[in-house]
Image (cartoon, rainbow over all chains, first blue to last red; front, side, top):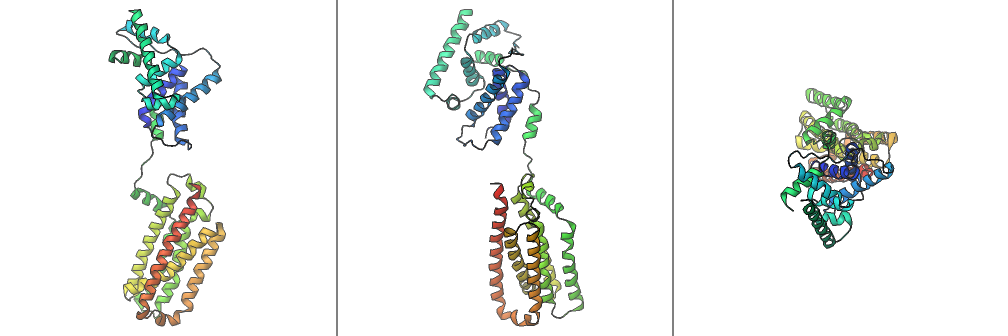
Length: 148
Length: 231
């Protein structure tokens, strides 16, 4: 059973990343926890995070399907006051990555989801995931290097 | 990954502050209730007439002790089944009125509620048995054994009835059984000194132990059958 308080912000961040709409992201975050708590088909394998993120992803996909790709009402905020140049260059570098690559970066390095949970979430082997993340990081470094 | 880049990534993915987080988390917090609080809450739900039903028994025992009535024991024994009937039907009220599903949706589990009510009323009845045994003016141990006999017999019979017959019919059947036990006590009151002679006391004691065990087993089965909806 994951600590709801601990994971609320992470799931919310993930939903916001997928939807770019704060209110909908929050609604889906709460829906994710409610679905998780009332779901009786989940077998406790000691990896509830993978399941939690899967519920969140499915809810976001449903929401996106319903919206039929309307223009995104909210952009990811650029809050950096000091070091604005770095923030802008990172944003530009991130925009060159695919959605999946950005999602992986978010989950692994911002939400700090363990590899074991990510393997469950993406249904792939630990080795394949590790290699993919390594390639994304290399790509990101190259993009950032080119900008300097 | 370098700490600086990680910080920049966190800032890049930073969403606006969630507005409903606190309210949601507050709603998710389970209310922890200790046993003492639960017992107090359940005791409040027991209607006054259930408590008052033990008053006639107490008054009768007091009358016997004050005016030294002969053959008071079988009369006291004859009143015990009604005490059980009132207590047990109160414990099983949700089953008698077909409200198990409603109770299952309540704050406490139905199992805890039934156990708490059984505990409260059982303890109250036991205290009453001890008080009556003292007031009846005979050996407390012997008095308690005699009073417990119809008590446990009725408890066992009523538990079996409540588990098998639901609704008002169950309540009626419990009343009939209590009257039958009470009637049997009065019927044999002339032979009471023969049957309850000191030499037979170990036999009655053994019978009470067996009845007690049967009541516990039947009570467990009854509670399990109530909570089948929950599992």
